[in-house]
Amino acid sequence: MVYLALAILSASSIGLLFKYSENRGMHRYTITAVNYLTASCIALVISIRADLVSRLSLVSGTGLLKRVATITRDGGMLPPGNSVLWAVLIGIMTGFFFLNAFIYFQRSIFENGIALSSMFARLGVLIPMTVSIIIWQEIPSSIQNIGIALAIAAIVLVNLEFEKNRTLALRSTLLLLFIFSGAGIFCNKLFQKYALLELKGLFLLFAFFTAFLFALRVCTQKKQTLTLPDLGIGIAVGSCNLLTNYFLIMALSQMKAAIVFPISSAGAIITMTLGGVVFFRERLRIKDMLAMTMTLIAIILINM
Image: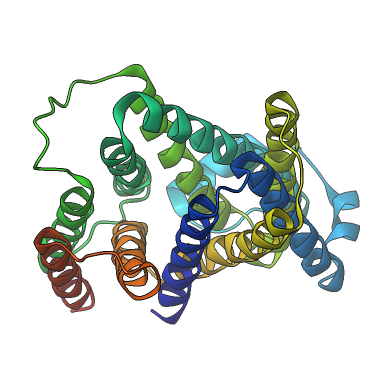
């Protein structure tokens, strides 16, 4: 539970830092690129200190898919050579999903508003939760199911604007946002489930560096410059970004995905809401207080 709490705290810090940068009119695409570059550098240092970079020489694709199928059926872990390749491949895939989720989040805010966009991004946790239950039979107890349902309800409640008369029609941008957000989260589970956990630094290195390359291209296309405040916020966000994924992987190694994903998502929303009240003097609405109460109850039920 400690790792899950640290993941929530790190994720909340990212949101609050972005809130600060938006209030100051900073360059969001530049900050995003610096964020991924910072996370890549930290992951590289972690990998070097853990002597993980040298393990790239052990990469082996021999029988990879067959071993994955066997592990899915009988359990276990991939051998060292396969694990290194798995960390690299899933890492690259994760970076692609990370950046695309961000791009479609920005597009969706413009097309559908921030309320619907935030809700669909957070509801992406339903993808890894559902797949984990179906493929790996990570089935929660009845009491835990109630807690999970409350956590998901809190995610919807805190993002849905009841005062606006909007129809929730399925739009392509929202659908892609939901898919990319959920796929990015699910990749963490894919790595944790099959590869050796000690390779997490290598996995994060390839994930963040891939996202950086994509972000750099977008930043160049938008012709955004780099200022000193952009650099500072980007470094802070990148540090929190890496820690979020690091702690999430550790939490997944100790708890079921169906528990980790909804609680981490709902907990981050509630923590960011409180941070907005404390640091940005935002008003706490009745639905926000109700969502926080639901999340607290959910945490208690899930740990029973």
